[in-house]
Amino acid sequence: MKRITIKVGSNVLTREDGSLNVTRMSAIVDQIASLRKMGIEVILVSSGAVASGRSELKRQVERQGLHMVSNEHEVDERQLYSAIGQAKLMNRYYELFRDHGIHVGQVLTTKENFIVDELYRNQMNCMTMMLRNDVLPIVNENDTVSITELMFTDNDELSGLITTMMEAEMLIILSNIDGVYTGCPNDENSRLLTLIHSDDDLNQYIQSSKSTLGRGGMQSKSSIAQQIAANGTTVMIANGCRENVIIDLITNKDSVPHSEFCK
Image 1: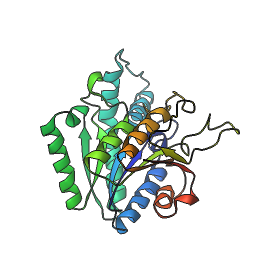
Image 2 (image 1 turned 90 degrees about the vertical axis):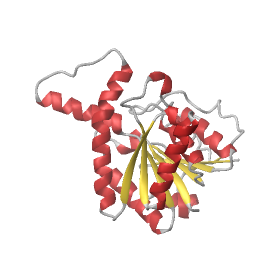
Image 3 (image 1 turned 135 degrees about the vertical axis):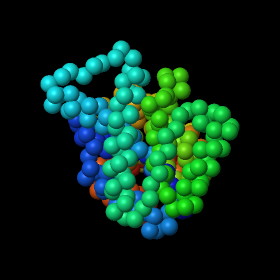
């Protein structure tokens, strides 16, 4: 395996109040650094900017004894929080990867970049050059300029598009649960679906509820996973809160609970 995409969700990267979980981020960075030592190129699709920005702004206004100014348009608020949180998120990644001697580059994108041919080629060429020069791309939606009509469903969709664009051989989606269950994950009668084919009907299992901090849910993750798996790319959904989960998925996948999607 030469190249993989890793998508990390907001609920993995942040605490309940939305602030960045630096310990978790550090563990993920350590694992990615280990993969690179194995000769595997990694593209990181990272959520967390909006949640982090919201938390940062909330703490600031509370310290000043003020109240946050809300807007009736959700997109406007996402733009504000993203502008604050993306800078903080990338700065933290920069510091953590620097400790491993790894250069990182920020790629902020919109859905238009996957629709217009020239924009698609420009983004692909940029990321290709980054990888050739041993720079790790960190990708996120550019929420500061996105509008409703051109927003990705969530970063699960974005990670699938990036995986296809860059011809990655595997997509790992890190959530806060182990994968796709036959019912509610907290139900003792539910079981984890460990192997899922691209044409399996999951409607009876998937709940439509979304994560508390991100825009996506298991319905989105499984849908994207099946689409990518249909093209012959292996997709794994696993719990990003588990210790050493990325390395285990690559070197000894049977040792960690997860859902694997295949053609």
